[in-house]
Image (cartoon, rainbow, N blue to C red; front, side, top):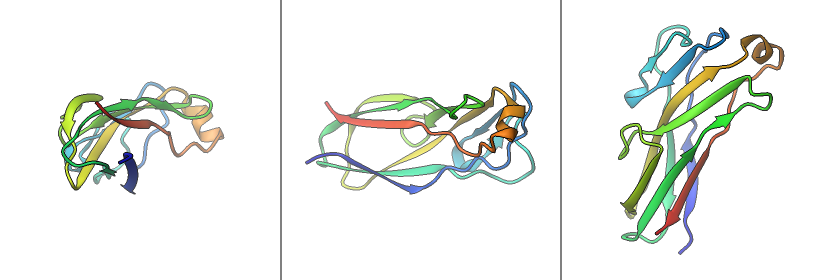
Length: 130
């Protein structure tokens, strides 16, 4: 059975300051930290449902992302079985398997991010059978 991924909850880091080199991280339970995090409150972790053949082993890999002109970069991390990992090998696929993802956004060029109205950064999740 082919593996399919469905994003059921989109990640949201909240408001980010546009100061160069500032970072904002969303971690377990949506806790935010870093000089780039603006305001109080929590972020939202991404939830990605993984379906395939239950019981088979899979490898999971996350790939960093950047906005179109590299104003922002993003380093995703797994928070469910990985505790901050970007790769996991030999994960047994469950009948109902959801990845919980957080990560860190870094402001590379705050002025350009404002000019270009950047409000998102793509990243990649790969899940493959062993």
